[in-house]
Length: 331
Image (cartoon, rainbow, N blue to C red; front, side, top):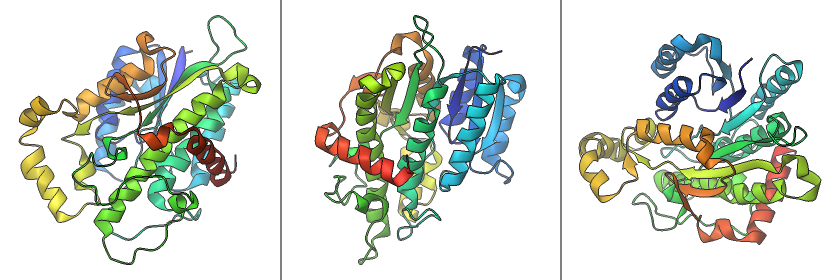
């Protein structure tokens, strides 16, 4: 039986594939559950993932988890909980919430659950995944009644107003948080500007929620969860990521092809967050698994402890978003 299990969402992404290869190579005593939207849909990215994990077939499985369908997320968590209770799967060591969605080409899209798609995938679905699996983490070395482990969520420099050249509308939490999950219709046709803001707000929400989660894990009624910690990491601006070429306007795709990728070495000299997906993937495994980050929590830029933007640090906003997320996710 492996020593522990990691759960990794969005496993066929640019960052995930090298991260998973690094994890499986460096941690032979652990099992990996890798989730993608639909394992049965032909995809060169899924094919690449299968090639990478082929030498490790006894320590890995690919599972379906469509984060735009909350029933699919709950089906995944239910199966994981059942397998851990039955002893056929080792308890969880880390949950890595890597999956994401954005679309800068269209008006807001809504899922069957009734939520704006970017916000549901990036925030609500991951909040459900994390909360439903908290009791499935492994035991602490010093107290078998206490769970321990790490939750890794993904932030972005886009959550800081004025930080991204693609920003047209600042990422600020609205007074009515319902606007995040069910935004009002666009009236100006600026799909790129509003789509980018929706993405930024979804990342700001998960970072703000991360701070609230860490507070709630320390409450007396959750004393058996006190050794589980949550981290939100900005993995950097990944110059070879498919993100800039997926659901983006022609201008951004060309910028990625002719400017960002060819000039990455130069950009990296000026900004260390400009780097490859493989470099970021190694850091994700490090912060999720290495002993040096045991007990770490809060916001990180790359592997350096940092602080989130002002909205995310506001205790009133943290608690309001915590309660609203519970409402959206029916938890």
